[in-house]
Image 1 (tube, rainbow, N blue to C red):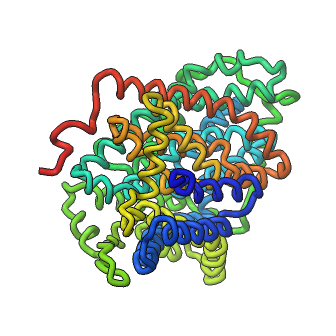
Image 2 (cartoon, rainbow, N blue to C red):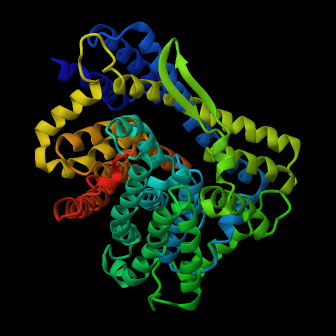
Length: 556
């Protein structure tokens, strides 16, 4: 009975989001109310504890919102200042080959935008840019969504995977593990397990593009560019892994994409691994393609054109500040971590909440955006428009995030009851462990995919299911950091087909009503990516290395 009750909030969430297509801003409060009722009447929690953990969840949700707000605020600042138009144009005119254009815009530029802003913005920016370059609208949406997968785990300066670790930190500490080491191992394996399948993403996207929009619908053009596409893949994933391991999660996607941009653009200009035969859409010629690029390049936002360096400067500054603040050698990290807001008790309940508000990436984003206003000579009306657009974009996310994190905190802490029952998360974990047993690594990524599909966000997916994944791993005596990494990776893969992103991409290219077709087309890349991740995960789990068992991971 308790197993069914424990799963009830997730069931209601799924039915309302998918079955009835209700927005998350409505579904999350309803699900939270359901969680409150279950905690009070089935788990026997007292009202003060229910409210205390709900408030703590809301506070943690606001932390996530700060990063979301900062990222979107900076993005809107660049759009209204005209900088984004200059940034996108800097990728044009490198090659007339449609395959290479797609890799540069959807893979490289999309990865950079994911690293900086996330939350569906890569597909929403890259897809219309490709349409402006002459790509078929649906084709542009398809490839933009496929490429918005590998960078997602460390998108928004590492937010999704940091959220995964933050969600489980209490149970990790309670288990007796060193939280810092646990987090580092999780980041490392998230990057490693993403890296090899991720290097194939440009090829997957190219294959989908030429198969659906080529003159003869053959996969041959995709294989012709296979060496270049793999080079482009590793140009991103190699620095991505190194940054995640040696610097941290914040810059893995952002700085990895910048490295990839340099390498891929230089390779294209020098003809390195570039196929001799250029590929175009059915009915196109090289002359028509060059004409479309020229028209895009001459497009004007009505503002005086700024230099490319000035346009990129906010992102350069953001990268530098994050880099300096995260590496101990620079000596400023303690100042960023030292400013805290503490909330030890809520309604008399010991919750021990601590917020390092300057450490939040969103704080850096927001400060850089404020500096950008005078740097880009923005008018008061433009700044006002930035605030208005950001508020409208964040409003719905705020409601969903506050109630969603509140629900998770309730489910995690529902063991604080008079009946002596384990938490709802523990009950769900035990039931999944009993069902999947040794095959659980094959299930873990699909839980992440499901979460992203339902919620439209890798961050929310990790928020909902990370505790479930970790507790199940421990019950099955499996390495929890690797299983948690597979959860976060699954959330990134799910971005290819999550309803929110598909709707956003379709809307920006003028293809509303074709969302189902896009999801069906992208199922194959999702399955291929997932299978590769499962194979790699199984390799590390069952061939001898378990990072969760060394004595060094235990405190003391």
